[in-house]
Length: 223
Image (cartoon, rainbow, N blue to C red; front, side, top):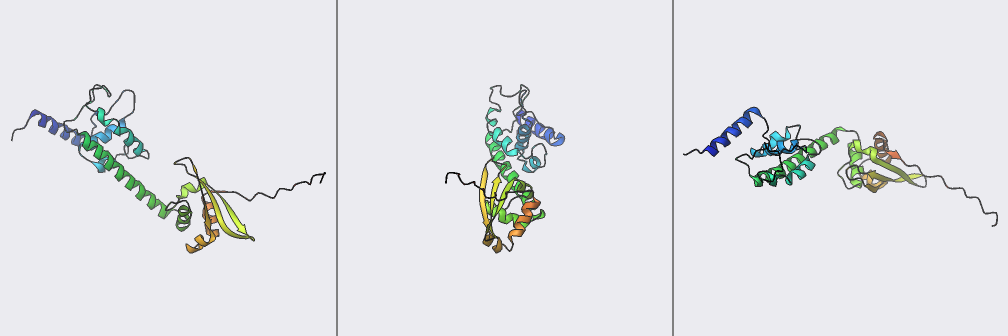
């Protein structure tokens, strides 16, 4: 089997990368911080999803935004358009299609890990059933205990008896407000009481909107 210089360079680069764990300068710029994307590009060379997720410089809360931006940069690697610094390299085993697939697979794995972590926290936080009832009213599986503070609620009564809880939820992820109500029957079917829901809302520092007192109007002196 004939080994070409190209193969030798590829073998040496991969060996050096594996041994030193240093990142090749693939996606680098003097004007923008592409560190996370450059590290992802390096992990893509060996399809190392596990390594990328174990890297704290990659696995952060806004990774999805970096991945979206990276999709627009991959095409410039080796493109000869001076998009990156002059010392940037194009690895011999660089394959844009495989990098795009790696980006997609990494995002899927990251979302799965985020969901697993969130589910674990949900089970360990107070008021599991109560937060599931509140979340279901907002078309979610549950609401995080930390997000209860974004709720404003009001207890509605009929004949002095609580019949439902009206909820305004200011969703921090989208900046909008969701409106929902939870009836006494819904709460009862979950094996809970309105008091149970009130207590977890209070514990999570939700804001209680009290009923406004009736306005006392002074009769017109001309009536």
